Length: 201
Ligand code: GAR
Image 1 (cartoon, rainbow, N blue to C red):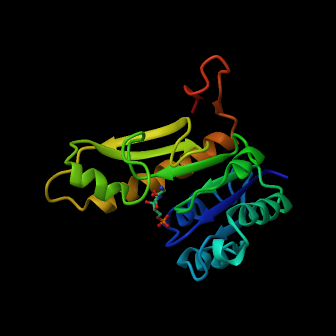
Image 2 (cartoon, rainbow, N blue to C red):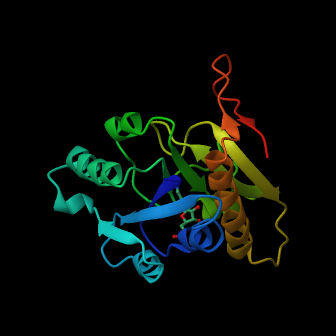
Image 3 (cartoon, rainbow, N blue to C red):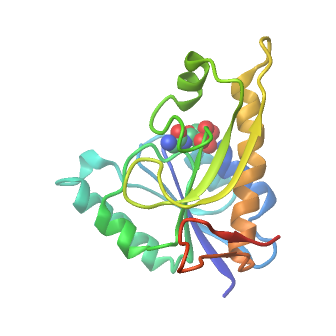
């Protein structure tokens, strides 16, 4: 059956596109569904063009967040996903969703966590004036942009650089790489040190 991936988005979906272009249909990995928290998110069109099943799970269409999370979780489970990838999914998922897919949810975030979690991470880092910026891919636990780190990559922004595109260029390599690693069984947790993942490429 291969390794089945569900991707959740809220917007553009350039990270989704990177996964579709470099991971989907290779090494036994299949993107089987793409869910969006926003109707009309451009990323939905990217999924449709790749022939991947899509659905919208807007918070406003459900009684509360838990109800939305439960419906979204059922949909992902119906697709028998092995991994849930948050690729610009800009909403917090509740504890029951996290537990339901325990250890099988990854997120990409445009900063070197634990610095600058939450919204506008790139702007936060620029405003702070940091000399080193970067990207984190991590397993998701409860809390905003928190959980054990799988991969990180840093860079030193120059004064005249287009920082956003540098961040996105890293994301588009790092997130697919993390998905490939997990699918190949290259990421494991040492129960004695659960935050320090073993990553073997
Ligand atoms: C990406 O930069 C991703 O790291 C960020 O949203 C963007 C989505 O872009 N995610 C977060 O900030 C999560 N806290 P995309 O829709 O083009 O992939």
